[in-house]
View 1 (tube, rainbow, N blue to C red):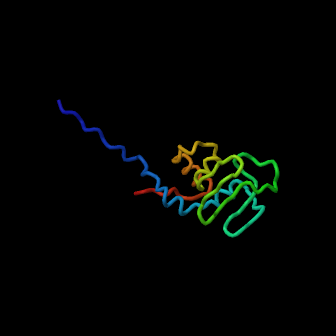
View 2: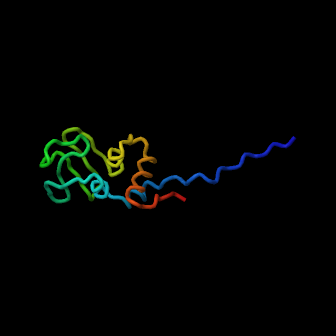
View 3: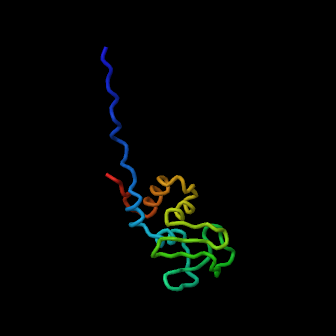
Length: 117
């Protein structure tokens, strides 16, 4: 009796190319989704209320964003990271679910999901 070889699942999508995604989607793109407003600007640093913990004052400058580095930090709630970390907050997903965050982000921005192959 011959056993059939299991066929490879060719319908699986290629893994996400996170390096390309980070190059194509900026911190400013994610801040735009959050409708975040700059209160203060100094060099490449932008300051304003924290969209993570929800600053009570619209003139708060506790949240710092550096679009050149695609990095952010709240000096009150201590949250911080890159644009994908902030997108995880926007979509209420754990940062560890980076694939779900990436897919949701690309869908929300109307962009193609970059794949490794």
